[in-house]
Length: 104
Image (cartoon, rainbow, N blue to C red; front, side):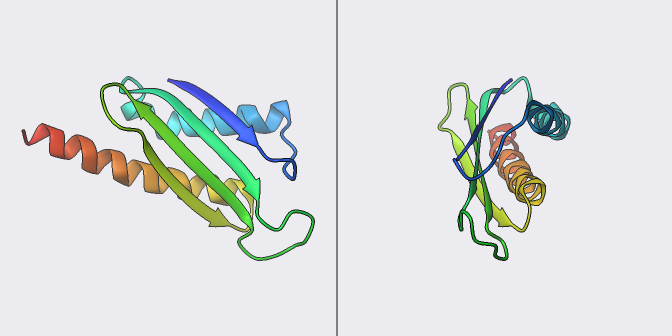
């Protein structure tokens, strides 16, 4: 599984932050890592320079071989919380999709 992290101009992406996100995502999705060819992570700050509640946005797009991509979005107060919420949503979607495939 290839993980590609993209940030907007309002979020500073450091190597340390990218490594943390990569490890967290890989650990969470280990069960589906052989089924996901690429995972795109899009991080943005909806209010740019202004502060606000739930202004950090994470959109995850999982590319699964032979299937349509699965995309989920989550907003939270911090980037890490937004990623965690999006990962929880993605896990629920993956469980649903692959659970339905098992029944066929």
